[in-house]
Image (cartoon, rainbow, N blue to C red):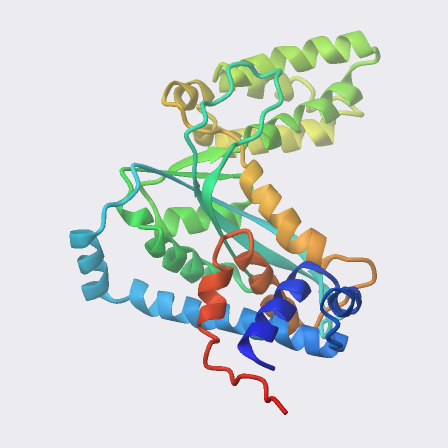
Length: 329
C-alpha cells in the first residue's frame, strides 16, 4: 500500500467502523480495500503516533533538550490541560472486559467565563491537541508530561487543569505539574445536587428551592454552606447515601472549587473540551455497537483517531512517506 493510499484508508478507518469504511472507501474511490486492509492502514498510523510519542518521552527526560526549550521557546501565557476517561470493551480479560481509555487535552481559549450559574455555555477552545492510551495511570502520567513539554506547559505562567473528581486525575496533575491551578468542572460538581433534592423533598417546589440555594452557594464559593446543606440530609432514610457521597466529594475537592476567584481571573470552569474529546475518540469510534477490541488494535485506532481533531494527521502521515509508490503496468 502506497503512503498516499494508506493516508486515505487510515483516515477512513479512524472515523468509521472498518467494514462500513471499506464499503464507503470503494464507493468514493473505486478502489477495493478489505476491512482488514483498512484496519491495518489505520493501525499503522496509530503505531506512527506511538513512535512519535516515544520520541517525545525521550525528549521530556532529556535535561539538555528541556533547557534548550526554556532558552529558545516562549511558553503560552495561559494554557489549559484536562483529563478524563471512557470505557472500551476489550478481549482477553474476563474479569475486567471494560478498560479505561484515558484521554488528555491541551488547549487555549480567550473566551470569557460564564457570568451566571443558570446559563448553559461551552468553551470555545482553540489550538487543541488530544492524546490517549489504555494503560495504568502512572504510565499515562509519562504521556501527560511528554505531550505537555511539546506544548511548553512547564513554561506557561498560568497552567490550569480542569477535571472531575477522579482521584487518578489529580494525583497525576500534582505529581507532574504541582504548581498548576486545579479546577473541578462546574457541571460535575452541580450533578451532586439533584439526587439529594429529589430524595429529601416531597414536592417539586421544595426540590427546586433547595437546589437553587445550594447551587448559588457553590457559585459564590460558600463551600461551608454547601457541605452543611448536604450534611443535613445524611440521616435521611432516602437521601442519606447520595448526601454522604456529596459531603465526601465537596470536602475532598473544596480547594478546587473557588469559583468566584476563578471567574475573577477569567479562568474557564468547565471541562467540556475533554468530554468532547472522549466522545469523539472513544465513544463514537471505539464503542460502536457490538465492538470488542483486541487491546493493541484499540489503542492504535484511538491514537489514529486522536490525531485528526488535534490537527496532527498530516504530520503523522508525513512520517510514512518512505512507503513505496504503487507499481504501474
